[in-house]
Length: 371
Length: 133
Image 1 (cartoon, rainbow over the protein chains, first blue to last red):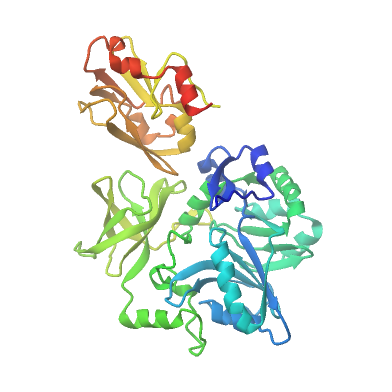
Image 2 (cartoon, rainbow over the protein chains, first blue to last red):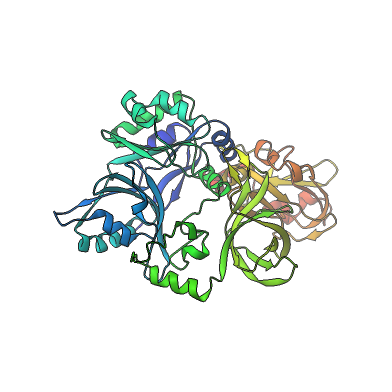
């Protein structure tokens, strides 16, 4: 079946000059003219992204025996016990029994026994099937909120400009939010989260109100940005992309996501824990690093990396998982999975030539500044 | 809709071709091609004096999104490359038919405009039909 879904903002994308491409079965704007201009717009001012294709799932109890928190403590590699305050968000992987990543997601703690997940569009079916399969034993009810649209407003001026565009009561709910917190307000929900390395909000709201918010944001000076800029922004920020930087075949430990695995308490049994403990005991063999190309060219996914230790001795091959040209740094950057022995530099094979790249911590730009 | 100057010839792989007064042939990529690629960030130009057959891959243009091969539209020798593109590849986006040219070729046959290779190039109308605009 060829799917061709449109978000409720599709007509707005056409109206604002969006160039439409297929993304995981969705007709989405890749840019509205220039993805580099849109990238700079987010780093310097404020941009907005339609992320309504992403999947919002509310978890509650199915009956009196239901325990949503216990369910999530079993389902996720990170521990929702860390979510003490209402509205707090947590980034986590959802693993299979082998420790491979089924998806990465954000979970918000909204109230006792009420959590909200935001998962990727491309993995919607398998995520829902997996979550529902394991929810039954915990008497947890799984409800997809497909009637909600989602708009991300990102950039140093995102806050001020979004406040001019949102209803007064929503602004009141959003104003006190600390980073990585969210608050609901009627049918709306605003999270101070994002996928760009800039401050801003992700706004969930009824589909019927989305087009009007889009127009009001535009009137407040927030420029529409497409998936192209979204990808260069997240890569500069060193944020993983599911399906590229981690998959069901790779564990979080070799995907730069060990920090999202909550090992303690030791008696918390989560799906994939045994496999990760085994991997750790045997010695983790690869790591995800950042690369900055020192020569002219563009790093791309699947390019081969010849890894070297600090003495320049070849220690094995690696592979680029995501690569692009960084508009902020004016250099090519990448995430790459390489042997753990890899030192400060490596060589990347591009069209038969070996080009030198610096190995760095996988964060390139944060809040407008080179890291 | 993209710009397709009527005085140029085109290939199905989206190069444009202009025969200059001195008999040399200037090559670039079409407005349609640069639109498809999006913001260009890197160009790898062919070597001067390199000799190619029509249809050979000779250089690469890369946008943020993707790398794309450029094919030599005619048989001949590269005599000049547009080195300003090394620092300003975005010129291809802003002026694909003008300062965004890629390279110049000396055709292997004299009177290039009388050759079969020239005959096979598309005129503006045929190129427009080719890209479906």
